[in-house]
Amino acid sequence: MGKLTGKVAVVTGAARGIGRAYALKLAQLGADVGVIDIDLKSYQHFAGESIGEQYESVVDELKELGVKAFGMEADISNQEQVQNSFQKIVDNLGEVDILVANAGGGTGSILENKPSEMDPEQLQTVLERNLFGTVYSVAAVAPGMKKKGYGKIVTVTSQAGLQSNKDGTYSHYGASKAAIVSYTKSLAQDLGTYNITVNAIAPGYIETGRLIEQFEQAGVETFTSQTALKRLGTPEDCANVIEFLTTDLSDYVTGSVIDVTGGALK
Image (cartoon, rainbow, N blue to C red):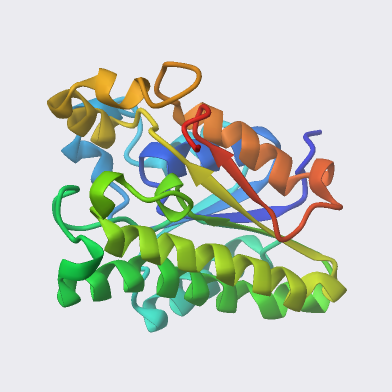
């Protein structure tokens, strides 16, 4: 038996990249896993995101690990779609014990959106993807967790939510991720009396199939030189922290933000 045998976990944005690594880690620990993504086959768009020809999606990978798995496609910024997806997962797997609210992302060029020149439409987009999507996901699982008196919620912020980029660029994304930090701390206070822990993980420069293309275009050294460990992180580096935050190892940890940045934060 694994540490999470008998538990039901949901990971949003888990079709590829870091989210997929989170889902696989939870399954390896014994949890049944629900997956929500806007496109369960989005890995097909990135050469570095291959999951193996024998699998149609991460859901098939999870089932091969000997756990139950169920996938739903939904736009995380659409509350009705989010609520419906979580209900379908509950119907198929049971009440949710663990939530990793990973879905989100940025928009536009990383060299744009200085705070004094922010594009309002792009700001709205990233707020809906990151902050609103996290809030909608929490709202879908909190009632069930309260009833059972147990829950592990992990939100996903970013290095950008803790430290600004040079010249203040991409500030719309950073602001949305910083908002998640504040929301997480408030949520921990709200849910603590129900034996529900709420923490955030803040990935840095992580070598996913999508991001490595951007890193290589700008020169990988540009990013590795900013870290103390002088390397990019891997999805597995982040997934190891998820293991800590979703098991009994972190039962007295709540309202915290753990950065996985290789020492890039100053």
